[in-house]
Image (cartoon, rainbow, N blue to C red):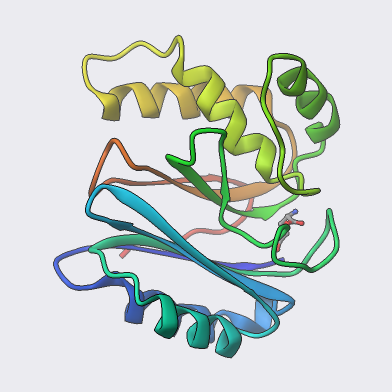
Amino acid sequence: MCGIIGYVGKKNSVPFIIDGLKKLEYRGYDSAGISILQEEKLVTVRAVGKVAELEKAALLANPKGQCGIGHTRWATHGKPCEENSHPHTDCTGEIVVVHNGIIENFLTLREKLSSLGHRFKSETDTEVIAHLIEENLKTAPGATPKERLINAVRKTNGEISGAYAYGVLWARVPGFLLGVKNQSPMVVG
Ligand code: GLU
């Protein structure tokens, strides 16, 4: 279990996301993180421990942006540490993913992606989602980056198995936050 929250709007997303993570903290509290799209670049802040630790780190880093995602983790794959805390990125650092649940076939996918040249930075099952989206974007059809992202995520969903919900940001599609759910609950408001 974990808590995920995303924000797209007109205000700075950081206070909304930190506040939302505090409300979701009962779902997971071994580490937490946020990624904020700031001037077309993703700024990620992560911290081990409760959301209060993340809040302190976020105050220091002071990211600002109208689109962002956050996660408070309850580890299933990989010990609680900064490297394993979410959000996780692809090789380019332009895609970030926060995830709830378990990707059952992550080992097979990790081996396949590693053989294609992807470099993993964590022990989590989650990280395969970011690299798989990166891989699928290479051939995803679509007239715009947004359409290509949607198609790459659709293909990714056909390749991963398990019960999950996840959120994705791609720095090339500012102001667009993609949410995916398979059995896990998700609320949009
Ligand atoms: N399986 C993921 C992990 O271990 C997500 C766990 C969670 O739902 O918090 O990082």
